[in-house]
Each structure stands twice: as structure tokens, then as C-alpha cells.
Image (cartoon, rainbow, N blue to C red; front, top):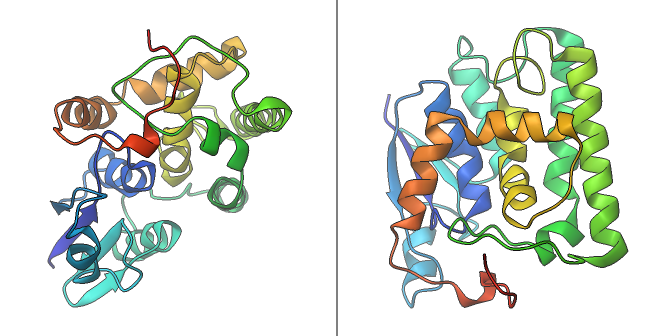
Length: 222
């Protein structure tokens, strides 16, 4: 089976990080094709693989899957022994629900705090009241998952799974934009940030030569 993941810049592409981190951390062998974003030939190069013209895109033999949650569900079907989702049915249902909420929500936080692995910022009023509501809801979600299903490990459902991969860019945002969080939230964030695959992705992103101006926030970096 040929498995290839098409991704964008590691310093900025939060959606690319999600399946890359999941596959890397759970030991799914794959090759990657990195296509720098916002270049003259970016759209043409991505469209060769992804019908939507966006990344990430998973290629399995002749199959193209171009949406993050669909990629994760496809991986769960093709690699049922890797723990993509929790084994417990109730935990699995909640993991899918929180992943979908992440996929569709938290626009104020995501807009005000684009993922940028090269910078750290002192906290300011990122996203106003809407941003604060997003962060409060995220912490509420994480606390509920940890309280109900988090025994046996430091992640949302104990062991690392797709839900953690979905929230990994949010972990980076809260960390790098200086958000004040509860001790329980910080402990979960530290577990994600310490993943060997997350550390490897970050180091590679920092070393990239490309700068995406629209993801460079106009605020003093630490």
C-alpha cells in the first residue's frame, strides 16, 4: 500500500499538522509531499493531488482524500489496530463530537491567533470577547474529556488519538500567544507539546525559508 500525505508549510499550516501528527505518532508509515503555500505555482501543484486545491490531502494508492476528518476516518478504516479513535464506544463518540466541534468552530481564536511556530507573543486581548469565549469553551471540552475518559494517560482520552491531533494547533496557539489557562489545561498542553512528532514538526517548520505575511501577526514577538 502506498501512503502519501500532501501538506503545506510546517511553520503555519495547522490543518496539515493534524493528520501528519496523528500518522507520525501512531506509527503509520507514509511519505510526505510538502508544497509551499502562497507561491505562484502552489494552486497548480496542490490540484495535481487534491481536487479541492487545498492541503492536507491523503493519497492511498489511487485514492485521494482531501479533508482532515475524512483523512482520519479513512486511516481508522485502513489501520484499525493503531488506535486512531478510542476503543470504548462512548469515548469514541465523544472524541468524534469534540473533533467536529474543533473542525467547525473557534473562529475568533483561529483568526486572531494564526499558527506560527516561529514566534511567541505576550498576551493581549486576542479576538476580544469572542476569543475569550472560544478559549473558555476549549478548556471546558478538554476538562470534560479528561475527567470522563482520561485515565491511563495524559491525553484527552488517555492515549493519544485523533481528537488530540485535531486540537494540536490550538495547543500551539494557546502556548505561543500567551493565553492564561488552568493548571489542568497547561498539563494537557505540555503533554501534546512534548510529543516527539510535534517537536520534530516544529523544528522542521522553524527551519523553513518561506514567510507567509498574512500569518505574521502585527504584535511584538517575545
